[in-house]
Picture 1 (tube, rainbow, N blue to C red):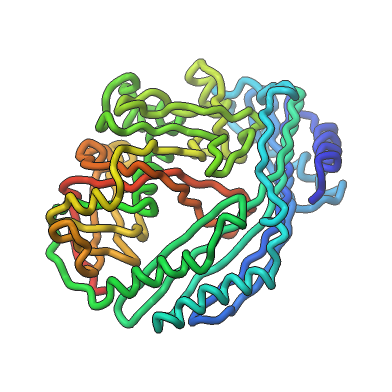
Picture 2 (cartoon, rainbow, N blue to C red):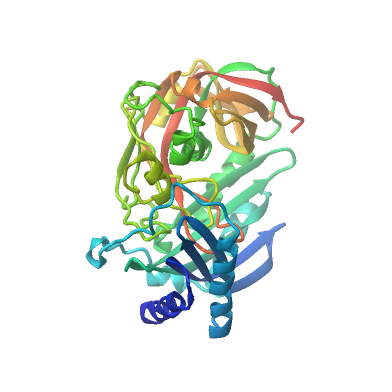
Length: 454
Protein backbone atom coordinates (compact mmCIF):
# COMPACT_ATOMS: atom_id res chain seq x y z
CA UNK A 1 0.00 0.00 0.00
CA UNK A 2 1.25 3.48 -0.84
CA UNK A 3 -0.86 5.15 1.83
CA UNK A 4 -2.96 8.29 1.80
CA UNK A 5 -0.04 10.64 2.41
CA UNK A 6 2.02 9.32 -0.50
CA UNK A 7 -0.90 9.24 -2.93
CA UNK A 8 -1.81 12.81 -2.00
CA UNK A 9 1.80 13.84 -2.67
CA UNK A 10 1.72 12.18 -6.12
CA UNK A 11 -1.57 13.89 -6.98
CA UNK A 12 -0.35 17.33 -5.87
CA UNK A 13 2.88 16.93 -7.83
CA UNK A 14 1.06 15.88 -11.00
CA UNK A 15 -1.37 18.80 -10.69
CA UNK A 16 1.54 21.23 -10.89
CA UNK A 17 2.86 19.84 -14.18
CA UNK A 18 -0.09 20.72 -16.40
CA UNK A 19 -0.60 23.92 -18.37
CA UNK A 20 -4.30 23.18 -18.71
CA UNK A 21 -7.17 25.21 -17.29
CA UNK A 22 -8.22 22.21 -15.22
CA UNK A 23 -6.66 18.87 -14.32
CA UNK A 24 -7.75 15.69 -12.56
CA UNK A 25 -5.38 12.95 -11.33
CA UNK A 26 -6.41 9.47 -10.24
CA UNK A 27 -4.03 7.02 -8.54
CA UNK A 28 -5.16 3.39 -8.36
CA UNK A 29 -2.81 1.07 -6.48
CA UNK A 30 -3.72 -2.60 -6.11
CA UNK A 31 -2.28 -5.90 -4.94
CA UNK A 32 -3.99 -9.18 -5.78
CA UNK A 33 -3.30 -12.90 -5.78
CA UNK A 34 -4.97 -15.94 -7.34
CA UNK A 35 -4.84 -19.71 -6.89
CA UNK A 36 -6.40 -21.59 -9.79
CA UNK A 37 -7.23 -25.30 -9.88
CA UNK A 38 -8.32 -27.84 -12.50
CA UNK A 39 -8.70 -31.63 -12.63
CA UNK A 40 -8.64 -31.68 -8.81
CA UNK A 41 -5.25 -30.06 -8.33
CA UNK A 42 -3.72 -26.58 -8.18
CA UNK A 43 -2.04 -25.60 -11.43
CA UNK A 44 -1.47 -21.87 -11.00
CA UNK A 45 -0.56 -19.56 -8.14
CA UNK A 46 0.18 -15.93 -9.02
CA UNK A 47 0.38 -12.52 -7.44
CA UNK A 48 0.37 -9.08 -9.04
CA UNK A 49 0.91 -5.53 -7.80
CA UNK A 50 0.40 -2.47 -9.96
CA UNK A 51 -0.08 1.26 -9.72
CA UNK A 52 -1.89 3.24 -12.39
CA UNK A 53 -1.84 7.02 -12.59
CA UNK A 54 -4.52 8.49 -14.85
CA UNK A 55 -4.50 12.16 -15.86
CA UNK A 56 -7.39 14.09 -17.39
CA UNK A 57 -6.95 17.73 -18.43
CA UNK A 58 -9.19 20.38 -19.93
CA UNK A 59 -8.30 23.41 -22.03
CA UNK A 60 -11.61 25.17 -22.09
CA UNK A 61 -13.93 22.39 -23.24
CA UNK A 62 -11.22 20.31 -24.92
CA UNK A 63 -10.44 17.23 -22.82
CA UNK A 64 -7.42 14.95 -23.06
CA UNK A 65 -6.33 11.98 -20.99
CA UNK A 66 -3.27 9.77 -20.57
CA UNK A 67 -2.01 7.24 -18.05
CA UNK A 68 1.12 5.50 -16.80
CA UNK A 69 1.96 2.74 -14.35
CA UNK A 70 5.29 4.29 -13.42
CA UNK A 71 5.86 6.21 -10.20
CA UNK A 72 8.97 7.86 -11.60
CA UNK A 73 8.58 11.64 -11.49
CA UNK A 74 9.85 12.05 -15.03
CA UNK A 75 7.26 9.55 -16.35
CA UNK A 76 4.45 11.24 -14.45
CA UNK A 77 5.48 14.61 -15.89
CA UNK A 78 5.58 13.09 -19.40
CA UNK A 79 2.11 11.59 -18.90
CA UNK A 80 0.68 14.98 -17.94
CA UNK A 81 2.35 16.50 -21.00
CA UNK A 82 0.80 13.80 -23.19
CA UNK A 83 -2.64 14.57 -21.78
CA UNK A 84 -2.08 18.27 -22.49
CA UNK A 85 -1.00 17.48 -26.04
CA UNK A 86 -3.90 15.10 -26.70
CA UNK A 87 -6.41 17.70 -25.50
CA UNK A 88 -5.24 20.15 -28.16
CA UNK A 89 -6.48 17.81 -30.90
CA UNK A 90 -9.91 17.13 -29.39
CA UNK A 91 -13.22 18.66 -30.35
CA UNK A 92 -14.87 20.79 -27.71
CA UNK A 93 -17.16 18.83 -25.43
CA UNK A 94 -20.22 20.99 -24.80
CA UNK A 95 -21.17 18.82 -21.82
CA UNK A 96 -18.01 19.73 -19.92
CA UNK A 97 -18.23 22.45 -17.30
CA UNK A 98 -15.66 21.63 -14.63
CA UNK A 99 -14.21 18.76 -12.67
CA UNK A 100 -16.33 18.19 -9.54
CA UNK A 101 -15.63 20.34 -6.48
CA UNK A 102 -16.18 18.38 -3.27
CA UNK A 103 -15.55 19.43 0.33
CA UNK A 104 -13.31 17.10 2.39
CA UNK A 105 -16.03 16.42 4.96
CA UNK A 106 -18.56 15.29 2.31
CA UNK A 107 -17.38 11.68 2.31
CA UNK A 108 -19.01 8.95 4.36
CA UNK A 109 -16.71 6.64 6.33
CA UNK A 110 -16.81 3.12 4.92
CA UNK A 111 -15.06 0.02 6.26
CA UNK A 112 -14.20 -1.63 2.96
CA UNK A 113 -11.03 -3.54 3.87
CA UNK A 114 -10.65 -6.24 6.53
CA UNK A 115 -7.22 -7.51 7.57
CA UNK A 116 -8.09 -11.26 7.58
CA UNK A 117 -9.20 -11.01 3.94
CA UNK A 118 -6.02 -9.26 2.84
CA UNK A 119 -3.83 -11.60 4.91
CA UNK A 120 -5.36 -14.72 3.31
CA UNK A 121 -2.13 -16.00 1.74
CA UNK A 122 -1.11 -18.78 -0.67
CA UNK A 123 -1.14 -21.54 1.97
CA UNK A 124 -4.63 -20.54 3.12
CA UNK A 125 -5.87 -20.46 -0.47
CA UNK A 126 -4.30 -23.90 -0.99
CA UNK A 127 -6.13 -25.23 2.07
CA UNK A 128 -9.36 -23.77 0.68
CA UNK A 129 -8.77 -25.61 -2.59
CA UNK A 130 -8.04 -28.81 -0.66
CA UNK A 131 -11.50 -28.60 0.91
CA UNK A 132 -13.03 -28.17 -2.54
CA UNK A 133 -11.06 -31.12 -3.96
CA UNK A 134 -12.14 -33.29 -1.02
CA UNK A 135 -15.77 -32.66 -1.94
CA UNK A 136 -15.11 -33.41 -5.61
CA UNK A 137 -13.44 -36.70 -4.68
CA UNK A 138 -16.31 -37.58 -2.36
CA UNK A 139 -18.75 -37.45 -5.29
CA UNK A 140 -16.31 -38.80 -7.93
CA UNK A 141 -16.31 -35.45 -9.75
CA UNK A 142 -13.66 -33.16 -11.18
CA UNK A 143 -13.45 -29.58 -9.94
CA UNK A 144 -12.24 -26.40 -11.61
CA UNK A 145 -12.11 -22.81 -10.48
CA UNK A 146 -10.14 -20.29 -8.49
CA UNK A 147 -9.73 -18.52 -5.18
CA UNK A 148 -8.49 -14.96 -5.38
CA UNK A 149 -8.15 -12.05 -3.00
CA UNK A 150 -6.73 -8.58 -3.11
CA UNK A 151 -6.76 -4.98 -2.02
CA UNK A 152 -6.87 -1.62 -3.69
CA UNK A 153 -6.46 2.00 -2.76
CA UNK A 154 -7.79 4.91 -4.77
CA UNK A 155 -6.89 8.57 -4.57
CA UNK A 156 -8.53 11.22 -6.74
CA UNK A 157 -7.60 14.91 -6.79
CA UNK A 158 -8.32 17.81 -9.11
CA UNK A 159 -7.63 21.50 -9.58
CA UNK A 160 -11.03 22.35 -8.10
CA UNK A 161 -9.70 21.30 -4.69
CA UNK A 162 -11.25 17.85 -4.50
CA UNK A 163 -9.27 15.04 -2.88
CA UNK A 164 -10.81 11.65 -2.13
CA UNK A 165 -9.05 8.57 -0.77
CA UNK A 166 -10.24 5.12 0.25
CA UNK A 167 -9.04 1.52 0.52
CA UNK A 168 -10.92 -1.68 -0.24
CA UNK A 169 -10.38 -5.42 -0.24
CA UNK A 170 -12.25 -8.59 -1.18
CA UNK A 171 -12.05 -12.33 -1.76
CA UNK A 172 -13.71 -14.23 -4.60
CA UNK A 173 -14.17 -17.95 -5.27
CA UNK A 174 -15.80 -19.82 -8.14
CA UNK A 175 -16.19 -23.60 -8.49
CA UNK A 176 -17.26 -25.82 -11.38
CA UNK A 177 -17.93 -29.49 -10.61
CA UNK A 178 -18.11 -31.85 -13.57
CA UNK A 179 -19.37 -35.40 -13.96
CA UNK A 180 -19.60 -37.61 -17.02
CA UNK A 181 -22.40 -35.55 -18.60
CA UNK A 182 -23.33 -32.86 -16.10
CA UNK A 183 -21.90 -29.83 -14.33
CA UNK A 184 -22.62 -27.70 -11.28
CA UNK A 185 -21.48 -24.20 -10.41
CA UNK A 186 -21.26 -21.86 -7.46
CA UNK A 187 -19.47 -18.60 -6.72
CA UNK A 188 -19.15 -16.07 -3.95
CA UNK A 189 -17.46 -12.78 -3.22
CA UNK A 190 -17.24 -10.78 -0.02
CA UNK A 191 -15.22 -8.25 1.94
CA UNK A 192 -14.91 -10.74 4.83
CA UNK A 193 -13.18 -14.08 4.25
CA UNK A 194 -14.65 -15.39 7.52
CA UNK A 195 -18.07 -15.43 5.88
CA UNK A 196 -17.00 -18.15 3.43
CA UNK A 197 -17.22 -21.90 3.94
CA UNK A 198 -15.34 -23.38 0.99
CA UNK A 199 -16.57 -26.86 1.85
CA UNK A 200 -20.23 -25.81 1.78
CA UNK A 201 -19.73 -23.94 -1.49
CA UNK A 202 -18.19 -27.06 -3.02
CA UNK A 203 -21.08 -29.19 -1.75
CA UNK A 204 -23.57 -26.90 -3.51
CA UNK A 205 -21.75 -27.17 -6.83
CA UNK A 206 -21.24 -30.93 -6.44
CA UNK A 207 -24.90 -31.66 -5.73
CA UNK A 208 -25.94 -29.68 -8.78
CA UNK A 209 -23.65 -31.83 -10.91
CA UNK A 210 -24.83 -35.06 -9.29
CA UNK A 211 -28.53 -34.21 -9.47
CA UNK A 212 -28.37 -33.10 -13.10
CA UNK A 213 -26.60 -36.25 -14.34
CA UNK A 214 -27.96 -37.88 -17.49
CA UNK A 215 -29.97 -34.79 -18.49
CA UNK A 216 -33.07 -35.24 -20.63
CA UNK A 217 -33.84 -33.20 -23.73
CA UNK A 218 -36.87 -30.92 -23.66
CA UNK A 219 -38.37 -29.14 -26.63
CA UNK A 220 -37.84 -25.40 -27.01
CA UNK A 221 -40.81 -23.33 -25.94
CA UNK A 222 -42.21 -21.16 -23.16
CA UNK A 223 -41.88 -22.43 -19.59
CA UNK A 224 -42.51 -21.08 -16.13
CA UNK A 225 -38.92 -20.58 -15.04
CA UNK A 226 -37.25 -20.00 -11.69
CA UNK A 227 -33.97 -18.10 -11.85
CA UNK A 228 -31.52 -18.42 -9.00
CA UNK A 229 -29.62 -15.21 -8.14
CA UNK A 230 -26.67 -16.00 -10.44
CA UNK A 231 -29.02 -15.94 -13.43
CA UNK A 232 -31.43 -13.31 -12.11
CA UNK A 233 -28.68 -10.72 -11.68
CA UNK A 234 -28.12 -10.57 -15.44
CA UNK A 235 -31.58 -9.11 -16.03
CA UNK A 236 -30.79 -6.27 -13.65
CA UNK A 237 -27.19 -5.76 -14.78
CA UNK A 238 -28.23 -5.23 -18.40
CA UNK A 239 -30.72 -2.65 -17.19
CA UNK A 240 -27.86 -0.96 -15.37
CA UNK A 241 -25.73 -0.77 -18.50
CA UNK A 242 -28.38 0.33 -20.96
CA UNK A 243 -31.49 1.66 -19.16
CA UNK A 244 -30.25 3.45 -16.02
CA UNK A 245 -27.25 4.89 -17.90
CA UNK A 246 -27.65 8.70 -17.89
CA UNK A 247 -25.84 9.15 -21.19
CA UNK A 248 -28.08 6.66 -22.98
CA UNK A 249 -31.10 8.29 -21.37
CA UNK A 250 -30.19 11.84 -22.43
CA UNK A 251 -29.43 10.66 -25.98
CA UNK A 252 -32.79 8.88 -26.25
CA UNK A 253 -31.18 5.43 -26.46
CA UNK A 254 -32.45 4.13 -23.11
CA UNK A 255 -35.68 2.19 -22.73
CA UNK A 256 -36.48 4.65 -19.93
CA UNK A 257 -36.16 7.76 -22.15
CA UNK A 258 -39.46 9.60 -21.77
CA UNK A 259 -40.76 7.04 -19.26
CA UNK A 260 -39.63 8.36 -15.87
CA UNK A 261 -42.60 8.54 -13.55
CA UNK A 262 -44.44 5.84 -15.47
CA UNK A 263 -45.14 2.22 -14.58
CA UNK A 264 -42.90 -0.04 -16.66
CA UNK A 265 -42.77 -3.37 -14.76
CA UNK A 266 -44.66 -5.42 -12.17
CA UNK A 267 -45.37 -3.32 -9.03
CA UNK A 268 -43.58 -5.91 -6.87
CA UNK A 269 -40.28 -4.84 -8.42
CA UNK A 270 -38.16 -2.19 -6.71
CA UNK A 271 -34.56 -1.65 -7.78
CA UNK A 272 -32.15 0.79 -6.18
CA UNK A 273 -28.47 1.62 -6.21
CA UNK A 274 -27.19 1.29 -2.63
CA UNK A 275 -23.45 1.94 -2.21
CA UNK A 276 -23.57 1.42 1.56
CA UNK A 277 -25.41 -1.91 1.69
CA UNK A 278 -23.78 -3.93 4.49
CA UNK A 279 -23.85 -7.26 2.66
CA UNK A 280 -22.35 -5.79 -0.53
CA UNK A 281 -19.23 -3.93 -1.67
CA UNK A 282 -19.60 -0.51 -0.07
CA UNK A 283 -17.46 2.35 -1.37
CA UNK A 284 -17.66 6.09 -0.59
CA UNK A 285 -17.13 7.83 -3.96
CA UNK A 286 -17.07 7.42 -7.73
CA UNK A 287 -14.12 7.79 -10.11
CA UNK A 288 -14.48 11.57 -10.21
CA UNK A 289 -14.37 11.80 -6.42
CA UNK A 290 -18.10 12.53 -6.12
CA UNK A 291 -19.67 11.04 -2.94
CA UNK A 292 -21.96 8.10 -3.55
CA UNK A 293 -25.50 7.99 -2.21
CA UNK A 294 -28.54 5.76 -2.42
CA UNK A 295 -30.68 6.26 -5.50
CA UNK A 296 -34.05 4.66 -6.24
CA UNK A 297 -34.19 3.51 -9.87
CA UNK A 298 -37.52 1.64 -10.02
CA UNK A 299 -40.03 1.93 -7.19
CA UNK A 300 -42.97 -0.48 -7.07
CA UNK A 301 -42.77 -0.91 -10.83
CA UNK A 302 -42.48 2.82 -11.59
CA UNK A 303 -39.35 4.21 -13.28
CA UNK A 304 -37.94 6.89 -10.99
CA UNK A 305 -34.35 7.78 -11.86
CA UNK A 306 -31.27 7.20 -13.95
CA UNK A 307 -27.66 7.89 -12.90
CA UNK A 308 -25.22 10.63 -13.93
CA UNK A 309 -21.57 11.55 -13.94
CA UNK A 310 -20.40 15.17 -14.26
CA UNK A 311 -20.64 15.28 -18.08
CA UNK A 312 -24.09 13.76 -18.41
CA UNK A 313 -25.33 15.79 -15.44
CA UNK A 314 -24.38 19.00 -17.24
CA UNK A 315 -26.36 17.90 -20.28
CA UNK A 316 -29.35 17.04 -18.07
CA UNK A 317 -28.99 20.29 -16.09
CA UNK A 318 -28.70 18.43 -12.84
CA UNK A 319 -25.95 17.26 -10.46
CA UNK A 320 -23.75 14.19 -10.70
CA UNK A 321 -25.23 11.30 -8.76
CA UNK A 322 -21.79 9.79 -8.07
CA UNK A 323 -21.73 7.19 -10.84
CA UNK A 324 -18.71 8.12 -12.95
CA UNK A 325 -16.50 5.33 -14.27
CA UNK A 326 -12.76 5.75 -14.70
CA UNK A 327 -11.79 8.16 -17.48
CA UNK A 328 -11.76 8.15 -20.41
CA UNK A 329 -15.28 6.74 -20.43
CA UNK A 330 -17.28 6.97 -23.68
CA UNK A 331 -19.92 4.49 -22.40
CA UNK A 332 -21.49 6.67 -19.74
CA UNK A 333 -22.33 6.30 -16.04
CA UNK A 334 -23.74 3.08 -14.62
CA UNK A 335 -24.99 1.98 -11.17
CA UNK A 336 -22.43 -0.33 -9.56
CA UNK A 337 -24.27 -1.26 -6.35
CA UNK A 338 -27.67 -2.40 -7.56
CA UNK A 339 -30.16 -4.03 -5.21
CA UNK A 340 -33.47 -5.66 -6.16
CA UNK A 341 -35.68 -5.75 -3.10
CA UNK A 342 -36.94 -9.13 -1.92
CA UNK A 343 -40.54 -10.32 -2.18
CA UNK A 344 -42.83 -12.49 -0.07
CA UNK A 345 -42.02 -16.03 -1.19
CA UNK A 346 -39.65 -18.77 -0.07
CA UNK A 347 -37.73 -20.50 -2.87
CA UNK A 348 -39.10 -23.88 -1.76
CA UNK A 349 -42.60 -22.44 -1.94
CA UNK A 350 -41.98 -21.08 -5.45
CA UNK A 351 -40.87 -24.54 -6.57
CA UNK A 352 -43.74 -26.28 -4.79
CA UNK A 353 -46.28 -24.08 -6.59
CA UNK A 354 -44.87 -24.90 -10.04
CA UNK A 355 -46.73 -27.64 -11.92
CA UNK A 356 -44.20 -27.80 -14.74
CA UNK A 357 -41.23 -25.54 -15.12
CA UNK A 358 -37.49 -25.02 -15.31
CA UNK A 359 -34.96 -24.10 -12.62
CA UNK A 360 -31.92 -22.19 -13.93
CA UNK A 361 -28.67 -21.94 -11.96
CA UNK A 362 -26.93 -19.41 -14.17
CA UNK A 363 -26.54 -18.06 -17.70
CA UNK A 364 -23.60 -18.30 -20.08
CA UNK A 365 -22.46 -16.00 -22.88
CA UNK A 366 -25.33 -13.54 -22.58
CA UNK A 367 -25.40 -10.57 -24.94
CA UNK A 368 -27.75 -7.67 -25.53
CA UNK A 369 -29.46 -7.80 -28.94
CA UNK A 370 -31.33 -4.50 -28.76
CA UNK A 371 -30.13 -2.07 -26.05
CA UNK A 372 -33.14 0.20 -26.51
CA UNK A 373 -35.79 -2.47 -25.97
CA UNK A 374 -33.59 -4.54 -23.61
CA UNK A 375 -33.82 -7.75 -25.62
CA UNK A 376 -31.03 -10.19 -24.80
CA UNK A 377 -29.90 -13.71 -25.58
CA UNK A 378 -27.75 -16.41 -24.04
CA UNK A 379 -27.66 -19.96 -22.74
CA UNK A 380 -28.31 -21.78 -19.47
CA UNK A 381 -25.40 -23.56 -17.86
CA UNK A 382 -24.12 -25.67 -14.95
CA UNK A 383 -27.38 -26.88 -13.46
CA UNK A 384 -30.65 -26.66 -15.40
CA UNK A 385 -33.47 -28.72 -13.92
CA UNK A 386 -37.03 -29.85 -14.67
CA UNK A 387 -39.74 -29.13 -12.10
CA UNK A 388 -42.76 -31.44 -12.15
CA UNK A 389 -45.72 -31.20 -9.77
CA UNK A 390 -43.81 -28.99 -7.37
CA UNK A 391 -40.67 -31.16 -7.26
CA UNK A 392 -37.28 -30.90 -8.97
CA UNK A 393 -37.14 -34.24 -10.78
CA UNK A 394 -34.16 -34.33 -13.15
CA UNK A 395 -31.57 -32.39 -15.05
CA UNK A 396 -32.33 -31.14 -18.56
CA UNK A 397 -30.04 -30.28 -21.43
CA UNK A 398 -29.21 -26.61 -21.61
CA UNK A 399 -31.33 -24.12 -23.53
CA UNK A 400 -30.62 -21.09 -25.65
CA UNK A 401 -33.00 -18.21 -25.05
CA UNK A 402 -33.99 -14.87 -26.54
CA UNK A 403 -36.13 -12.69 -24.30
CA UNK A 404 -37.07 -9.14 -23.43
CA UNK A 405 -36.17 -8.05 -19.92
CA UNK A 406 -39.05 -5.59 -19.51
CA UNK A 407 -41.61 -8.11 -20.74
CA UNK A 408 -40.15 -10.71 -18.34
CA UNK A 409 -40.45 -8.26 -15.45
CA UNK A 410 -44.13 -7.88 -16.33
CA UNK A 411 -44.64 -11.65 -16.12
CA UNK A 412 -43.17 -12.12 -12.66
CA UNK A 413 -44.96 -14.78 -10.62
CA UNK A 414 -42.76 -14.72 -7.55
CA UNK A 415 -39.85 -12.98 -5.84
CA UNK A 416 -38.03 -14.65 -2.96
CA UNK A 417 -37.87 -13.00 0.44
CA UNK A 418 -34.12 -13.34 0.65
CA UNK A 419 -31.76 -11.58 -1.72
CA UNK A 420 -28.05 -12.33 -1.87
CA UNK A 421 -24.95 -10.68 -3.23
CA UNK A 422 -23.73 -11.97 -6.59
CA UNK A 423 -20.18 -10.73 -7.02
CA UNK A 424 -18.71 -9.79 -10.38
CA UNK A 425 -15.65 -11.83 -11.27
CA UNK A 426 -12.40 -9.89 -10.67
CA UNK A 427 -11.17 -10.36 -14.23
CA UNK A 428 -7.71 -9.26 -15.32
CA UNK A 429 -7.77 -5.55 -14.47
CA UNK A 430 -7.27 -3.63 -11.26
CA UNK A 431 -8.87 -5.02 -8.10
CA UNK A 432 -12.18 -3.29 -7.43
CA UNK A 433 -15.04 -5.50 -6.30
CA UNK A 434 -18.60 -4.90 -7.49
CA UNK A 435 -21.77 -6.95 -7.28
CA UNK A 436 -25.55 -7.05 -7.40
CA UNK A 437 -27.88 -7.98 -4.53
CA UNK A 438 -30.67 -10.02 -6.08
CA UNK A 439 -33.43 -12.45 -5.01
CA UNK A 440 -34.59 -15.59 -6.81
CA UNK A 441 -37.15 -14.75 -9.52
CA UNK A 442 -40.02 -16.80 -10.94
CA UNK A 443 -41.14 -15.72 -14.42
CA UNK A 444 -44.06 -17.05 -16.42
CA UNK A 445 -43.67 -18.15 -20.08
CA UNK A 446 -39.93 -17.55 -20.41
CA UNK A 447 -39.05 -18.35 -24.04
CA UNK A 448 -36.34 -20.89 -24.82
CA UNK A 449 -35.51 -20.92 -28.52
CA UNK A 450 -33.17 -23.90 -28.79
CA UNK A 451 -31.59 -26.86 -27.02
CA UNK A 452 -27.88 -27.65 -26.76
CA UNK A 453 -26.25 -31.07 -27.03
CA UNK A 454 -25.09 -31.13 -23.40
